[in-house]
Structures are given as C-alpha cells and as structure tokens.
Image (cartoon, rainbow, N blue to C red; front, top):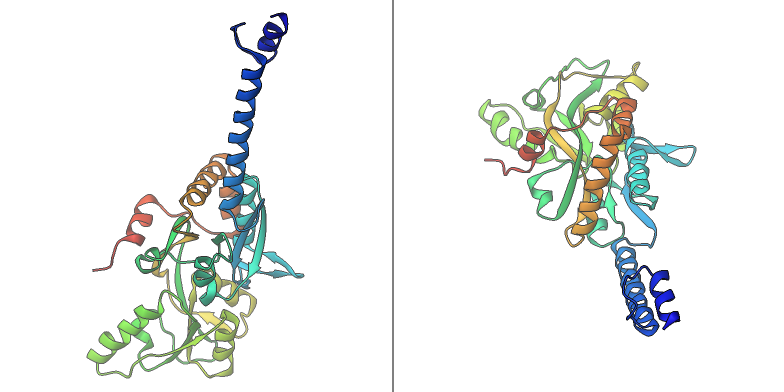
Length: 293
C-alpha cells in the first residue's frame, strides 16, 4: 500500500487507491496518444520535420539565387514560416507554370512564389494571403511607344511569363477594347521564365513586356540603360498568397497562425520593409477571391 501511495504522489495523483498497474496503463495510453499526434504532424508535410516549398527562383526580388543559395522575399518568408512551425524549409526551384501542378501532386507542402490569388486558382488550391502587388509595363529606352495602360498595347507584341494571371485580362482587352477601336490585336508571347520574356523584349522580338510591378522596377533599376517602366501605379492590383493543398487544411491553418505570430512579433513587417513590399488589407483579400462579374 505504501508503494501505491508513493507512486500516486510521484505521478501527481491525489488518491491512494489507484494501483501502480493502473497508473502505468494510463501512462502508456497517454504516451501512445502523444506518439499518434506526432505521427499525424509528421504526415502533414511531405518530409518529416521539413517544410518543402515550391518557388520559381528566376523572379527577383521575390525569389532568385544568390551564389547558388535561394534568396529574396519568398525564401526569407518561407524560412520564417518554417521556424514558426518548428520545421526546416527546403526550397525547390520550379518553373512558375508547374508550381500549382507540383503542389497538387504533393511534390511540396506549399508554394511561395509571388502566386497571385485568383478565384480560378482558389478552386484548385487554398491560400494564405501575405502580400499585395500588381503589374507594370516595360519597353526599351529606344522605343517610341510608351504604353501606360493595357489598352495602349493594341497592335503590339507583348512578352510575359507563362501562366501569368494578367494574360486572360490582356486577351480580353485585345478581343474587346482593341477590336471595338478598330485596332490590331495584342500579340501575347508567353515564356517559361521572366528572364526569357525580358530577353524577347531586349532582342526586339517583343515590343513591350508585362510583369509584376516589383519585378519590373527591379529590372528597370538594374538595367536602367536599356529598359524603362512606362505605366503609372499598379495595373490589375492583386493579392499574393501561399498556395496550400486543399486536402491539408491543418497545414493551411498552421501557416495562418504562423503568419499571425510573425505579424505580432514584428518579423513580418521587418521583411516587408526590407523588400519595399506591402501587406494586403482584409478587404483586398476578400475582393481577390470574389468571382469577377
């Protein structure tokens, strides 16, 4: 009986009537439950202890290689999210057009690659919104054209990265605005990467280029002797989100919590300030997911 009471005190129980066998049985059940939870957590990600992230590393300032190491806002943000989740981030360089396909095929746990939030994509994947941006227009310094809005692109060859959210919108402008004005259509030239689209512009194969605003201004700053941004403000303002598989709501919720924690700690704002980017408002997030009329 003394052993039973001592064991009860050791395990924090108030009753001396509980036997050692019962207490150890309860402890075994508790340990099994914890092990089950750890197993479930491990199965949440593609690799245990790792947050595997799909990113197109040809897209500065969002994502690029710096001495063969992933750099830019999205890799930095991915490492921050992984830290908040107690995981290690593994960045997989993947072309933009293949990111959603790779996510749905379970190649990675999330996409962090300036992925625009659209109602169409939201039917395929879940989002954790974390940035806002828009697009800009670029031409050669030697160009006589100075397009400020999409309607100015009628009759021009426009290069862009493949699967960009603005491509259907440009097509709509071409089919309606250009046609109604009696102008030639916009010839959209899609390329696997942004650098290839830029090369088409610089070589003269394209008359203009449409690109994310932050990327456009980075390009124009680095190549100010060759190209310039001609649009003012953001064209097609839009929210950017982390892409997560719809069959992993627990990971989506964990990332949302990690973002909230990073916001409260000031780490998120520090990253935004570092790259000159902005967070979306609640209304902008709501609007980005609303079906377009």
